[in-house]
Length: 138
Image 1 (cartoon, helix red, strand yellow):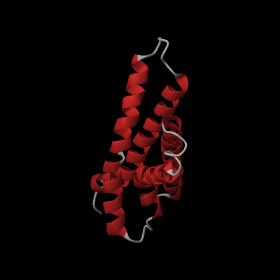
Image 2: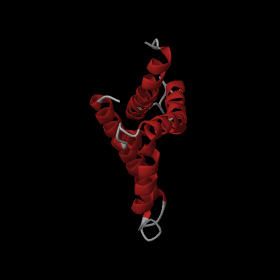
Image 3: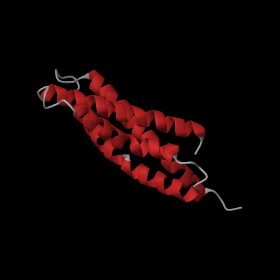
């Protein structure tokens, strides 16, 4: 995998983890009392790291471990479908609200960027394997 692809996966993995952390923690602190929500930031930090792991984990695996790298890329491409499903759900819901009073441009824009990032990550993760299968054997 190219270094630029690794950097892009790391940056997007951190962004996805940060969005998960901030939205989850802010919802918890808004919905719960201060005493009940006291340690919620730790929970949401681990959830954010787990949600972003299919993106940053393949970027950290060294390329010299070929078989492990291939397995992690395929598994990560499949696991990125989980946040993509929920982000696309928010995007679809906001698109149905367009033109109404409940439409929020910032939520729509954030969901659009995150879903585009997930699709980009899947392409980056799977593209080397597709090139290997299509390339003629010399």
